[in-house]
Length: 151
Image (cartoon, rainbow, N blue to C red; front, side, top):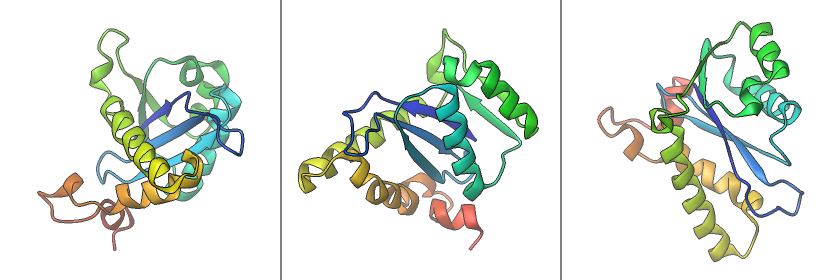
């Protein structure tokens, strides 16, 4: 599973400026939680919310951001026996999340322009699209949500 934070985005009506994103790399199933900041407390709270639905991963990959390398975050991963791999500072493109940032930002921007609502209100529709598009797994002919839920 890969995790990363996107932002800062324009502050939403609920006061959030970042998205914490998790992608199951085998199924491409995506989840995202809006957060006000990317402090270690916000990140671990968001990860707990994501893991309560997706389940605990055995291993995650993240960048070297302080919110993912802090003592609190390391304790969180240790407590749940999650192995952590960090992307190279000198080679951030080794983390596939960097390309995904552009995709989700572009989708949110289009939906915001069409609806006139802020990005957080458009997040559910964006996640639905990401979970049901076939281009992620064209070679396997299945949707990310079907592969993730084994349905």
